[in-house]
Length: 413
Ligand SMILES: [Zn+2]
Image 1 (cartoon, protein in one colour):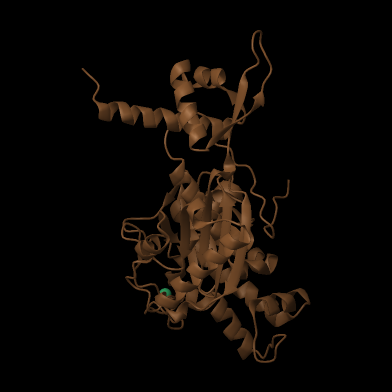
Image 2 (image 1 turned 90 degrees about the horizontal axis):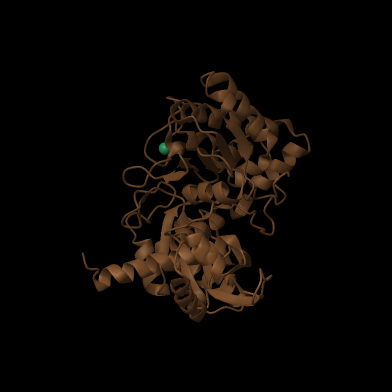
């Protein structure tokens, strides 16, 4: 059978990806090394390298050791050939992270924000911060290869629109992904924030090495991102993981989703702070009590603050008992602003899961605090863009080097 020109161009693209991913992962290689490891001919490799050097994705870095004869020229991936942007559009803040193609951060900006301002103001704010972050790094939009963005609500993943997001009133059905694509002129990946947190932690943080990971984001709402058998699980439409709307108290208070007694209405940040105010606790500023004030009070030994985190921990633990029984995850990572309470929240949470989940699953589920902290979602957003950019044939075993992000907790090793 004769090859058509379409077949040939597909094959060429496949081989280019293969070579690029090998150089990206394996470090410095000569053309001969590449030919040997990919089983491509020397002339095919040389011609692909010409194209990759022209695209600035690969560069020559001097001569390697000779094994008799001429010293071979070594090639390496050029991580600064382009940049990607990760955006965490939260309920109360926007965080923008710019990294190079090897996920090394070059700029980070964060500003307070209220998701209740609605989609018009929200998207303008995000666009402005993206511009400022690029300026901070001395970059132009033309150097950006793609943008990832996480939002705190259920989405229709195929259309890139939030679907009745309880904590984003007014954002229902807004074509966030398409609008940003139009404005930026770049590929845009929109996802649920907890999904991106799960991807970030799975690749660079507390989920490394595990196959089944749940990332629980405890903030204004309570969301869950699931990695099952090494892959993100979004469900039929893209709304999987809404663990915050698990009913844990039939007679509980009304929830923003329209139901009542949901985990979110009992254990997310607003519920904890409301209970704290009712108990008479005050913040540093007389009129404002923040979750950080409450964490500080717990550290100082305030019994009410400790009790409130313990109560929230037990409630989250009750909901996670169902998750552990249903999915048997190896690692559950607790992230979001409330997770900064550390053991005040996590000890009672772990204890509840240990007592209530099935004896077969509970001891094998490790419940840990997020390692990427406030950056988890933005790092996940960067990661999905990089995965899309470099998708395709890949010979090398994936490596998970720790991403050095200022302010993110480092692993204990
Ligand atoms: Zn609810």
